[in-house]
Length: 105
Image (cartoon, rainbow, N blue to C red):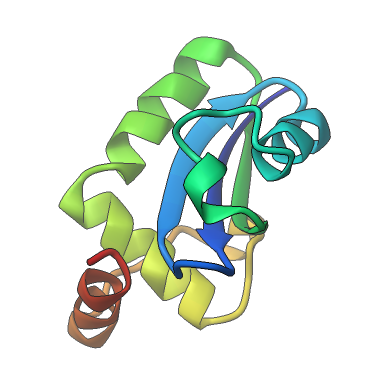
């Protein structure tokens, strides 16, 4: 199983979106500073995760979440307090778009 995930830095408040096969191991590597892209923001919290059966599907979704629309979708999901997409497809809202824009400065 492959995963798309979003992390939030407790240090900076910024978000990081990625994909992997072993989510627990990947989160541990982010938090141990082994990833150059995220070592500045340690510690990181997992705020969103979504499973996929193929790497190609996970990478496609990761790319989509890195767009403006995808960021708004994740912001809406995080605002609702759920990291489980099984509760339904993500929906955007103008207020959450403003919140996300502020959080990714």
